[in-house]
View 1 (cartoon, rainbow, N blue to C red):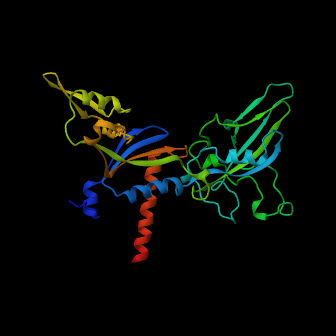
View 2 (cartoon, rainbow, N blue to C red):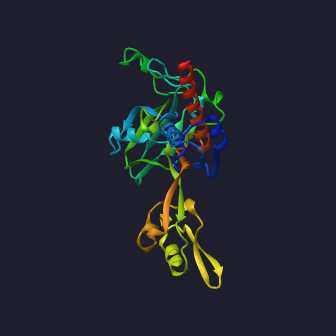
View 3 (cartoon, protein in one colour):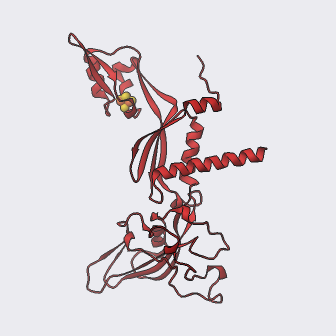
Length: 316
Ligand code: SF4
């Protein structure tokens, strides 16, 4: 019998389901049932590349006498996940001047006194400056680009945001300072997308797998059942007692199957079949911290909806 690949809105509305199986502050696993692989993949790609976050883009270096080269230090700073909701900010274009709506400013000033032991500089040492840059304003004559002169914001971000901003993880090592060494700099974070640079990707990873289906072609009983249960590294099978000393293998936890194919090697090869359910996806989202994972998924749905609306309006 052929497989029905036809798409209809009615079929989709009837079959589509989302079931959350795990939700923590940082990650989420859920089942999407009744969708095509192309739509599951569209969500994955939007999550990785098209959902905006705030990330450090510019670094104004005052002093760096540590052993880490400026470029390496700047790259590390760029990858620190910031605890800032991107929905409260606007994109900054080439000609925009930094303001409280498009830029977040942090300061880092750490020094290791002479005669002290080595000091570790952590991401938690970044201090949010709600009033904007504290570095002296470069005059247009001093600055190579008039638009890139930095100054305080006209309004404090404390007035427009609900909570103070910071970094998501305070214990990320940025550098180690020896006695007499210091780092002093100011960083400017702006809104961007993962398709421009991975530092803006809101997820550590977003991936899915098709729901595994383990099927017995015929019953597996007795010693063979015991052997099959021992073969599976993730305990997909159990033994069912049929009475009169008879036992048979049953598929108890198909979701745990990693499709390692161990059970289709050796004598059980002919009896076990591994399949995947074509329209059932187990989706995992690991947030880097800007937004909780459930909000990331909701935003991804919104972006896909906007794209569809744009296509429909272009066509009509
Ligand atoms: S494929 Fe591997 S994980 Fe899946 S049931 Fe077989 S042995 Fe277990």
